[in-house]
Image (tube, rainbow, N blue to C red; front, side, top):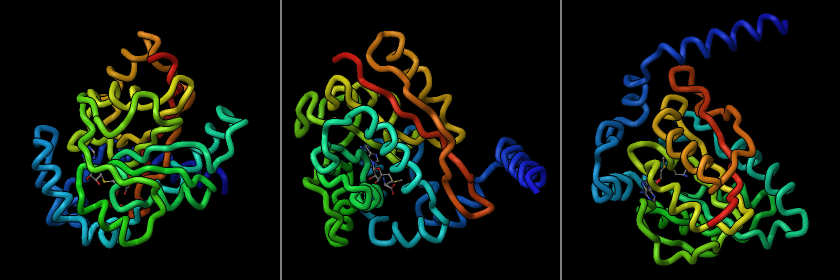
Length: 243
Ligand SMILES: C[S@@+](CC[C@H](N)C(=O)[O-])C[C@H]1O[C@@H](n2cnc3c(N)ncnc32)[C@H](O)[C@@H]1O
């Protein structure tokens, strides 16, 4: 039985490596998938998510989105070790690219109740507001290499980003600004698409070589449950060493 599961798992990973998911993405996200890419402007990205907001939850549910709980659990496992003396409800967390708030919901279930949301799209944040996701603050701003003036330097213990660090959205140059937002000793937890790690890795490595942060862990995280979409992404946790 174990050997069979191993073979099936291996086969799926192999298929993912050679497979092109374009058609499936178009099937599940028909009005949105092709509208933005790695060269889109932030105004184009904002407009897309503003329009998508009302049907976003329904569409990602239909696609079998699976990463919110596992990524939140992954962050939780490192946060408990890194901040043993800070109660969970006092740990100040930024959900970067929070969208309609699924990570806020998962973190709340885990006892993290001091979570702030940041997103480029006011309409995505409005959906989170209407759902009553208990964010302390809703910050509508673009995460880029530029300073987000609403966030103080070292304001957060943790920044978590789920589904936001994709090349069409938040690009690698934003890591420096994310680090600025986190206090020394704080954590940055994020998820990358299985096929986009190569785009982000050079910047991640550069920051590590400069002693800005150190990698605490990386793990495959379930991404979609549907057979015809990628089954996993790569979760990362870094510790900020210096500002
Ligand atoms: C794929 S959704 C993920 C939303 C949510 N984290 C989730 O897991 O469902 C990406 C989110 O990132 C936001 N976004 C895209 N580019 C951004 C940027 N440069 N700065 C901040 N938010 C951005 C979008 O508005 C959208 O809400």
